[in-house]
Length: 265
Ligand SMILES: Nc1ncnc2c1ncn2[C@@H]1O[C@H](COP(=O)(O)OP(=O)(O)OP(=O)(O)O)[C@@H](O)[C@H]1O
Ligand SMILES: [Mg+2]
Image (tube, rainbow, N blue to C red):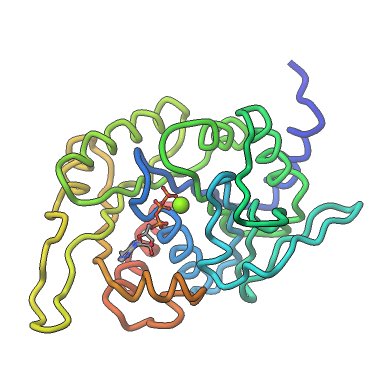
């Protein structure tokens, strides 16, 4: 079947994008957006050119997390210009198009697919080493659209350490395989916390669920990101965590995960 014009535009953009990475999970609130933002910053710190695309149409929060929520996309006849987060990192998100962030977007699947197609095809991404895509929770329309529009996409599954998340990760991995995504591996987020008072490690959500899932599904385990209350505080203030606190153990963990992904790309 002949490709339609929108897909041709996506293909043209993709010629200039060396690697693609989809961040997704079996369920919500596990830290996908936090991981997508900090991995993008980690790659950018290494001098790589990174585009970050937020395909969470209903709950876009990367702009807030990265301190660029007041910016708008520059839309002209030539295309859409992404918002610069820093010299090496640009962001496109639905939130830049909303008049009022408090009013929900009520769209059916095909409309979301269209929007994602435009983000991939109409945005002038330019030359990129990586395009990192943050998805909404679960295995629905958005990651499906991304996988269909851009073949040969890599993916990381984010999970939390408790046993129940094993089931969610299994589902997410199976979904990725079915769609032909290259699974870079599983990231275990919110994995233990160092007590600020006594310095001992506390495993709030247990430990090892992500690693266990990786072993069972025979995909790489990319590492653990500890719980750090400053991730919440800085995120709410719109300050980039690994930029603000590069020496924090969670920042070092993000850098390590980034290196592992780069090694296997
Ligand atoms: N390692 C961590 N330590 C402390 N807080 C964290 C950590 N990771 C994420 N958080 C916090 O947990 C909350 C949920 O994280 P985030 O929004 O990244 O999850 P998500 O998987 O993208 O959620 P959704 O499924 O709604 O898109 C946020 O307030 C974030 O700041
Ligand atoms: Mg999110």
